[in-house]
Image 1 (cartoon, rainbow, N blue to C red):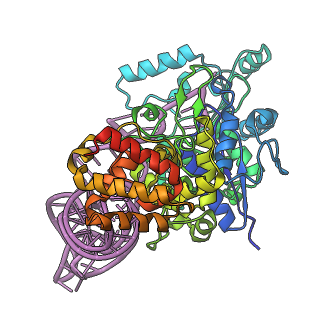
Image 2 (tube, chains in turn orange, green):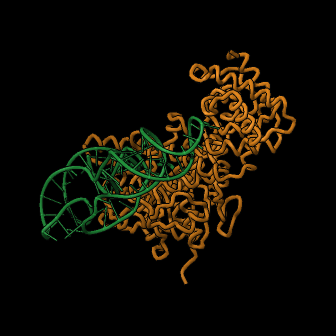
Image 3 (cartoon, rainbow, N blue to C red):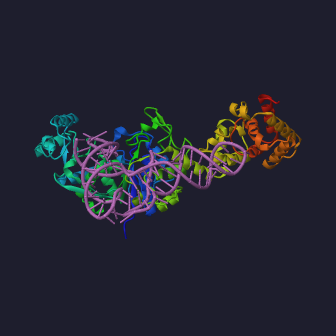
Length: 511
RNA sequence: GGUCCGUUCGUCUAGGGGUUAGGACGCAUCCCUUUCACGGAUGAAACACGGGUUCGAUUCCCGUACGGACUACCA
């Protein structure tokens, strides 16, 4: 029996999680669900300087919003806790020590000034890639160059040190990436990365290997930016004696800047008229705000569907997928290799699709909420009618109010262009007749009765209804476009309709 | 610079040795219609380039170009 699939999403809490991070989380989630496995969230907060308060909640809320909550997380721990690396701090040194003993790691005492001096020296000597490696380490202050007693003395005196991996001089490291196939790297292009920092925290490289192993992670699905360090990770698994249970890797194509080229970054947030973050985020330090898809009016199911298709496709021609359907269709084999720019128009289209599938009742709730902000009240029944006639032309729930205002507030001005073109004797005559019919009516107005009354009015004036419809619409709504007029009449009701017609006749001229 | 990764319509992509290179968004035109939208139909729009392999390459191989990632005691 094969092992249970366990995957993790491992963000660092340094601010808001952009759409690319959410996609990585989603693919992990889909893969876990598809294979009946577990999806874990691990907070990678080994850099204490970059910790941003609120970022953890942001991550949690973003995942919750689209319905991909982790099975195990700091808030819902499983058997492999803690799920915050800072709380696992004491666990890492043991493994670093093991590497030290096995000769795969060493102590280094170089100060940042010395490191900088080394890089400058190498750059001056036209060395192509100045790095701490098998050559340069022989000239630095570390347990490989210093006498054993001096190393001990330095350690005993509490001098700051780091532990570095000792990368072999000549070795081929290969890994079989699920997205990219075999990737081969020579160890001479790798450097002696720091494993343990001088503050006693591990770096990402050590921590992620130790934690993935301890947490039983079977597949590492992460962004392509990690591909260059993947060989280092393979080496760490090997030196720690875990190569047999090493997870499989899948490096996801990057999400690119919507304009031009390059990796999508936080800086892109302000540059465009659309969000790149799932939720609104206010940076606690700078106070800067970035917009969120949620606040912009995107429905979670639309956002989910949209990001799922950024770098993956089901291989057939379906476009609309619920989370359940995504799980059923998902496979890593169908993840693309090349970077992806996203098109906000497509996101809008998805939103429209999901908006239209919502019930009038659900949509009415949005409208009612917007109205509350305007200090207006409306019956649920009317709100549902408005939702019903408006949803075919709305992109966001807020359009119900923004684009449908005229059903709740009488126009005080009229579209000039439409008025010039359509306001004429015939229109005035029909409107006057229609008004009289309305006046005589006692039954509540329905779309049907409105239609027959209007038709009768036109007939009585011997005018074709089609010729004056636009003018009627203008009189009642102030504009030349909108949903079915008879539906609007029904929503407005008899009295309001009469008032509006009178106002239009008075304002636009009645002869 | 070095290492690694990538390249099919504007964008997201399907496909894969012989196809009219398919779909979606967006765009255009038409139909429907009381307008706008929805919906329907149609259209414009792509295999980066050069060599090879082959009867045949967009597909396989090698180069070139272009783009990207990485190159921290950040993740």
